[in-house]
Image 1: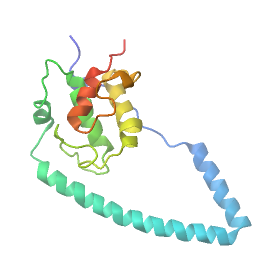
Image 2 (image 1 turned 90 degrees about the vertical axis):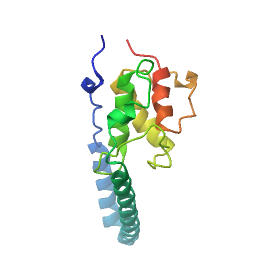
Image 3 (image 1 turned 60 degrees about the vertical axis):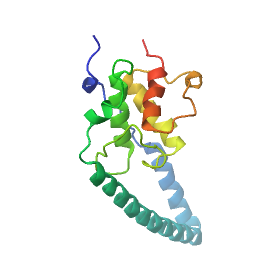
Image 4 (image 1 turned 30 degrees about the horizontal axis):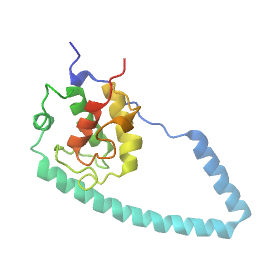
Length: 174
């Protein structure tokens, strides 16, 4: 008997590379000393971009706060009921639910529906799916992410349901 999905391991957190941070700091210091006008231009551009990002973050926060308020009555149990637990691994259902919540840029744990469009509702893009979300789900569920081009849903994942079914088709690791 396999262990319950709530006992799955969490995906390890990614740590920023300190070496990259060091080189960026050295580069900016060299620019400041050797080319002060270029440094001033970079500082002004950074300030402008930072302001734009700040206002975009406010807009994003409002969007996810509204989404949370509309869905706060939903739970993972209701999400799981949208799938047939006899044919779909419940660990995949839980991992998809929790990993989508973890990748969203909000403090709230947004309740998820199987019919949610990953791109439109959660504002994710293909890189979020391929580089962050899918490897984390594969790690947590013990599913291979190799040979994913043989999966019938390869390149067709649009909704949360599609993502669950995609991983259900993937082979289990030893």
